[in-house]
Image (cartoon, rainbow, N blue to C red; front, side):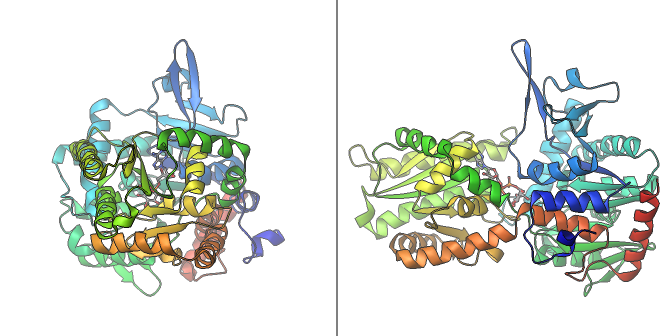
Length: 522
Ligand code: ADQ
């Protein structure tokens, strides 16, 4: 073990994660699994382009895969994806520096629709978020979810080829996969990260196929959530629904002689990279482009950046801006609020309706308050690249993250990381995972319109010294709890070497060390 790996106070960097993975997973194949692929091939005229979908997940998993020459199994969704793979649906990535293998899973259109849009996004997504959106369940969708998980399982098992391997599964699309894998190859060490909240057991009661989903998740050796609170909810759900032994103190579940460790791992961003880019000249150029979008520079600029999703509380936030203008007419003509929203999951009816409602709401508020050229809300309904988002972060006086419920929320962390000037105020929903770490934000209940409006007033009038004190403390938190720490802690915990926290039960340590030894000797 190198000194950097034992140094638990040192910063987590890409290199440190790389070293940890090289050392701990030596000889053990690493297989990451997610619905979304890290590289996507698309047609552009007669050319094929390879794009990296903007995602924090790729940032975190890419160094792990590079360090271990691993395999990433994911749904091949690009229109040129089939043209670049070999007979086993594999392609080496990244294209300019091939370091690991992307194994694509092909999902028939009906299965994709019913598994991804149906069960995952119309069923599990609203079920797990307390956003008062009724989940929809249908047996067809559930059967397709099972079939899609089976297709992923086939690909993973083929890659593992009966040998021990470390499988790292992502998210709620693949809840049945762990059990399918464990049943077929008990030598696999399986970790799974659930990126959204786990609801309390009363809410989960509505899910029609509880036993099968929960049993699926108990195929994991390690199951991670962002928060302790989500771990506790999960353990209670198991306790009420499944014949298993729940050790609440150590957060372990034992079923049929197999232990699943349930642990919190708050996800984050690549803070160092973010800071370097925020200081670049590209961000300065992007600032000029925003001036054209925003129009006459306002005295006070507020921003919101989201996927257009009903969990993000966008209408609530806009109502708060409206209410602020009612209560504090001194801001009329002086404040502009820029809402950047990228349409998402528009194949789902609830999302389509939200897009329409949002456009109507913004129109209503702007008509109500318009004065000459000025209107309070500027809506930018599209994907905006990270450089332009950083420029906007740096221009803003305050950023609003008002999710009704959110596992973590990376927008809050990105705003804080961009503020290399140490200024700006973050208004943050208490119902985000991020609120547990960013306690120097102005914390609000997004359902309480008056409270959110007063928070904006407070943010605008916060003395500079106070703003900077809060921002610098938040920056220190995100700098230290970065994405490499998230990934490193998961690898450490699964390989049983975490000395810093009470990790896996003692007998589990031994079992994992044995597996590691078996793998290393190969
Ligand atoms: P999401 O619900 O997608 O993720 P979030 O964590 O906020 O939510 O991340 C959104 C990402 O999309 C951010 O990186 C943001 O910059 C980007 N983004 C948003 N609007 C954009 C736009 N208009 N243009 C370009 N990019 C935009 C799920 C969970 C979260 C959890 C993450 C990670 O719901 O709670 O934080 O996974 O685990």
